[in-house]
Amino acid sequence: MAMVKKKKLVIQVHHISYNPEVTVILWKGEHYILTLMGRRKHISRGFLDALTVYIKENSDKAMELKEVNEK
Picture 1 (cartoon, rainbow, N blue to C red):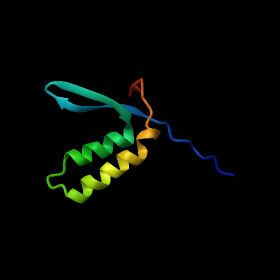
Picture 2 (cartoon, rainbow, N blue to C red):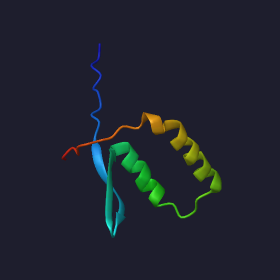
Picture 3 (cartoon, rainbow, N blue to C red):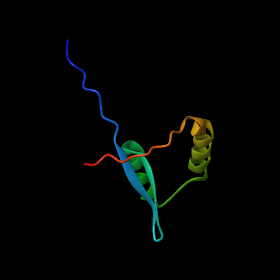
Picture 4 (spheres, one colour):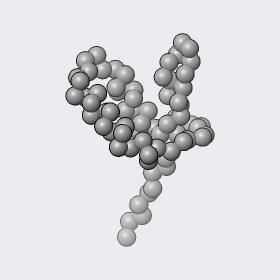
């Protein structure tokens, strides 16, 4: 039987703003998603509506992250 390696959860810091500097602590995958979203030049109303629904449905599941893993 093959051993299954469990992925380590990685916490990162994401800049919401650089001036003034505003950061949040989040999971690595969430950081990747926000980075991709920040590169978008065209955003549809439907996309924002879908994100709003996602936020409403998942706000109660969100957890506060306290520390950042060093690379």
